[in-house]
Amino acid sequence: MEKQECPMCGESMRLEPIEQVNRIAGTMQTSTRHALEWHCPECDYFEEAEGELEGLSPELKKWMDDNK
Image (cartoon, rainbow, N blue to C red; front, side, top):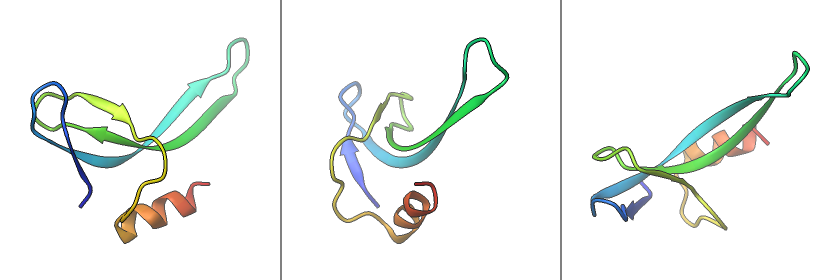
């Protein structure tokens, strides 16, 4: 499992898939964006994962490939 240290509390953060749904102003349309996000289970701090990520689990690789 991918991990990174939380800048707020120092605990281990986890890499999690997210789906952001945005409404387009003035219309009934929505836009969906798929991304990976670092999330701290202790203090709920989060930040979007940036750049190339090495050693992704097969589940995260499949999720990213399915949602391109």
